[in-house]
Amino acid sequence: MSDAEAKAKKAFDGLAARAAINGYTCYATTVGNIVLSRLGGAWLFDGVAAASAWLDHLYQPSTEVAA
Image 1 (cartoon, rainbow, N blue to C red):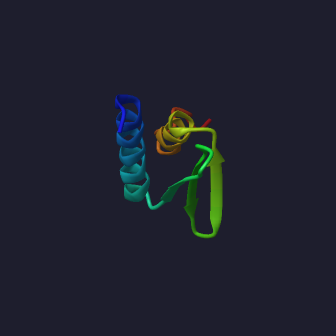
Image 2 (cartoon, helix red, strand yellow):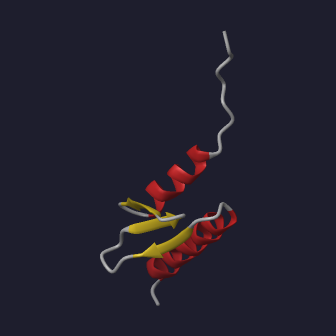
């Protein structure tokens, strides 16, 4: 396994762990897309970075103040 492949596997494994903590199942397709699924829904991303950013965005506290 090359260094680039090892880094990609480590990044995917970290994403899969974070997804599992948040209740999602994480899959990598043969063409490199990432699929996160939960409760009958599925979200498709172009790669680990996009899926990771989406997970980060999910649980950000709201900064809006009710009027």
